Image (tube, rainbow, N blue to C red; front, top):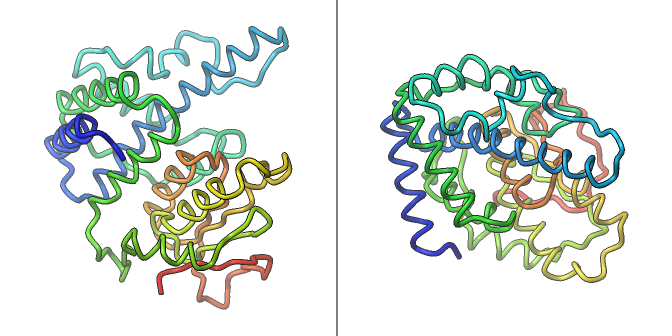
Length: 277
């Protein structure tokens, strides 16, 4: 559970996004997801730099060494003046995120190609960046809490969405996962994943029941191929990819597919299928 002080900070950040010209809850989460991703890849770059320093071996970096590319890192633009920050993020940082090599970085970047940054007010963006920086540096220290934060934001989505989407209540998801009892040897699929609630709940169940006994191969599968999700809404794919990444599934298998179409190539490799009943 997130403490009330963290929830209050999230509420303020949410209001700041709305003040920036974004009104729909799904779009608010989407815009926050882009900013969280910008911070996340900066932290990943810092880990790469540390690994290079400790090992003495050259590593593959996300950002180049030039001043122009280093300016794209969260730590180097977070303190900019409002108008300069907005122009820098829209014209340079966001374009950089869209053009990231998805094979080398994350499943999330795979679905950024048609993304649009919609926070139009510079002062609002500055407040959101400052709010996220404060939240992650002072309150949200580990990946588990980042996952809890993201799920708290997802809880703001209405039950009914676009194109007939329906958000399954958390207690129903947890009940179904408890009944199914997934194991580290399963390959789990949600054919209409939405925000990846079933996949995240399955991941939590496996960690709670098998964390001390899982092999290195099972952990590798856990981070990549164990969980698959499909959807026909690219916004949902971006949100579900980030949700899974914040729950230690670093490269989830989420893909744009219509699961009921005869044209898709979904195989029968899955041992567990979880979906809205």
